[in-house]
Length: 196
Image (cartoon, rainbow, N blue to C red; front, side, top):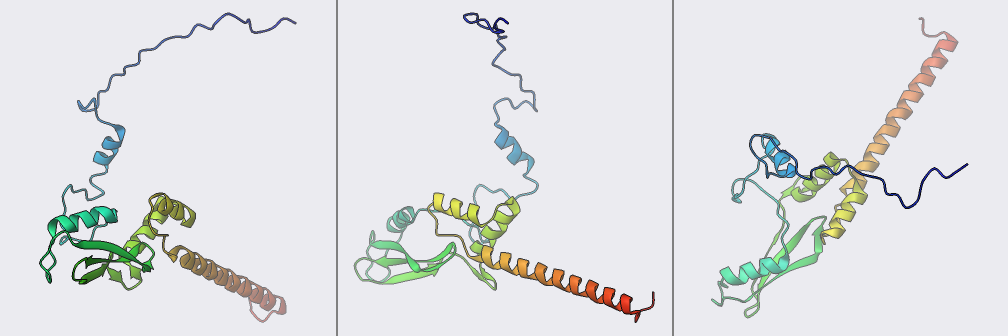
């Protein structure tokens, strides 16, 4: 039987136009991501500029950039010098993504520190929002660890483990009670102590 393919002969291909006609409300040079964002504007609150007084918002910021901002704007209230601040994170005070940041004057040694997130009854707000966001997206602890490692963030909160164990135990207890009640009903029906 001869070969099905002949070598040396190229297959002729149809060359299509590489330009496409875009007729979506007269916006031809708009990316699909921008269209999705515009479509979802009713669901989310997008603001270009926001103030800290309106509500708590979270921003990922480099500590070196924060140090530059402090040095360019602020003066030490005790020694009245500028360009004197060192902004540092206290790594022993990390609580998931929330940590303690302090600004210390190089000359007089005065310092002021604060946590990077508000405290709520169940922990810190940034941790709760992070865990809730990861769960809403549909990914869990391993994806959160990968994200934090790639973004050079502190490790994610241990909230994933506690909630997973709690849910497992609750489901196990429910299953145990249902099986126990089913066995009890079967025993009572066999001994005919319950009339059907």
